[in-house]
Every structure is written in C-alpha cells, then in structure tokens.
Length: 468
Image (cartoon, rainbow, N blue to C red; front, side):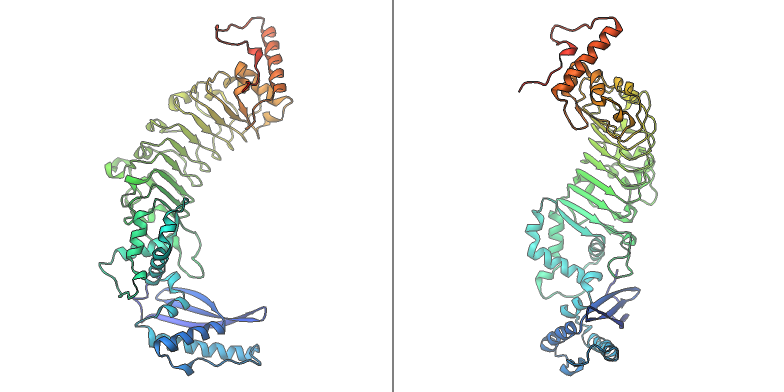
C-alpha cells in the first residue's frame, strides 16, 4: 500500500492518455508512489475546480492552468495539447505543495483511497461524523482489507508522522470506533484493488484495536496474513471465514504462528466464547484436531468444502447443529451415533449419499436435510421411522422423491407421528394422513400380526392433523 509521507521524493504524476466518451473527455492521471500506482479519471473542469481552490487557499499562480477553450475543444490535436499541458500543471503544483499536501489535492490524486495517511484521515472524518450511527447498525461495519492494513501500519508508529490541524481527522476517532464495534466484517478480494496494482490478499493486518467484537466475518482474505488477533479470542461468539482457501482448521485457530501444529498449541490459542463457527466455501478436507481450540461450539457450518468423513466432532461436547452441505460424502459410518449422539440438526444436502441407515440411532435428531443426494430406495426411510424427536425431513432432489405417492410412502414409517413431520418444508394434509393410515393397516395385515400400544398411545392408523 502506498506511503506518501515516506516517499515524497519518489512520486510520479503522468497523464499518458485521454479518453472521450459520449462527447466528454477524461484525462487519465497515473499516480505512482514508489512501487504502487493507480489511475484517476478527471475532466478538465475538475482540474479547473481544484485550481480555483489552490489559488485561493495556497497562493498557487493563477495563470499556470491551461486556459479554457469553448470552440474546437473536441479536436484530437487540441486534446493532445491540453493533455501535455495538464501533465505539466499537475507536476508543478505537486512540486510546490508536496510538503504540506493540502487535502483537496490529496483527494484529487485519490490518496485517500490508496495511501495510508490520507485513507486514515478519511476514515477518521467518517467516524467523527457518523460513528454513533454506524455503531448502532445491526449489521455491524465492514472494513476493506486495505483499510485494515492502513490501521495496522499506523499502530506500528509511536506518534503521528504529520501534525493534523483539524481534529476531526485525528486517528483517535478510528481507535474509538474500532474499540466499540461489536460486529466486524473484513472484506478482501483476490484481484487488484480499484485501479491500482495493490493486491489486498498480500497485505498483512492485525486486530489489536478491536476490543469488543462478538461477531467476526472474514471474507476473501487469507488468514495467514493476520499477524495479531488481539483479544478476539476472548470476545468473539460468532466466527465466519469464507473464501479463504482454508485447507484445515488449524490454519485459522493458530493463524499468527509460523509453525501451525496442534501439538504446540497452548491456552492462548483457545477461542473461549465461539458458539457458532462457519467455515463454508473453503477447501477443508478433514475436521482436524484443532477444532478442540473452539471447545464451546454449538453450531458448526462447513458447507461447500471437500469433506469425505466426519471426524473429531467428539471434541465438541456442546455441538447440536452440523451443516455439511455440498461436500464429498458418499457413505457414513454405522456408528455415527457414537460421534453425534446428542446432535439435534444435520444438513448433508448436495452430497452423494445413497443410504439413511447411519441415522437410525440419532435419537435426539429433530431436523435432517439430505436433499439432493442419490437416495433411490423408499425402504431407506424406515431407518428414520424410529427417531422419536424428528420433526423436519428434507428428501427433495433425490431419485426417491420422483416415485408415485412419494410423500405418503415416506410418512408411513413414522406411524402416529406422521402428522408431526414436516416433509420438504410442508406438513401433511388430512388426505395424506388418511392414505398413510391405510398403508399402515395394509402393512399390519400383510405382516400378519397386530400392533401393540401402551395405554397412552393412539392406534397407528389414527394419524390426524391435531385440532388447535
């Protein structure tokens, strides 16, 4: 990221070309500070507006701006002549004003977008004016990686590099805002930032100024570029990391460490309050042992990864919801109940499962989503019929969902509980329940034995919609 204050003598301003769109001519100004560069488009009128300000406030010579021309100002020869003159003009005023770099000139060059000091001034001004309202936003606040990097670089400096006369631009407003923020999103990108050659994915960041964050989302940014988590491990309750190309969980839990081995983890690596962990849209192939560094997880979301098996979840004693949609599951172990005995909800949609047998002993299960798998045999549903707590079942998108009377055949194994089952997000109507009762009676007759019930149970074939 550009650092103007450290490279005032290594600044190049050029206008290599002009572009005309719909009769309007823009001059392409290229700004380069050391190795960082970007382009800015300006009309001649914008140069003139800047010039008027600089003449009034900074005693810039009035006659150095190329003059206006009302007739013939669209010709290629004139545009080229003006381009050369404007390049000379912008370099002249930079040479004259670079020691003080007035804010109007800095904004004209878009230093407030690509350069550390002026970007922080822009943030400070925004938080000074709108900070209270931004902190009250229920969605929290999103920082771009380039902004996070600027904050991180400023925190390395023992004092301001340049005196700020207007206190609304003071860095203290940034620190005050970050220290009170509850919901933080860090948004990166895999491409260059804006029109620059700055790639946010290569910039290092830290979080020491964020003291009270309870919800942290990191999107499209490699977590190995984080060199200090601050006290986030003590405050974050909901942690989401997407599109970070994570291959395993230890890369996140020990992101600041050079050598990321669970054997070298200690109490400082434990995330004390995280109850929801969402690592969707990564490249995770296994739930590794580092999951134990988040011991209080209740909801684990690993959608759209590369998982083939469920491992190490017994290290999460409070786990109740597991989301594994869009992975690479083809089978599940018969002893799944030993790993997920207390699980309440499972989402294994958009995988390649062919059987439901592994779910047969998950007696705490209330919701199961196995939509868009490869389940073909209606008899597989019998493995779910004995789950006493199951209320929600999604099977849509499987081959089995295309058979005749699909819904009633799925509901029939649930007996008198058929009326309680939300199948594919829809409760059965009375007609379906009547058909279920008939199927149950036929099955009983076919098996040649009568059902047995406790004194408190109604007959299987009396399933009805409860009267409210």
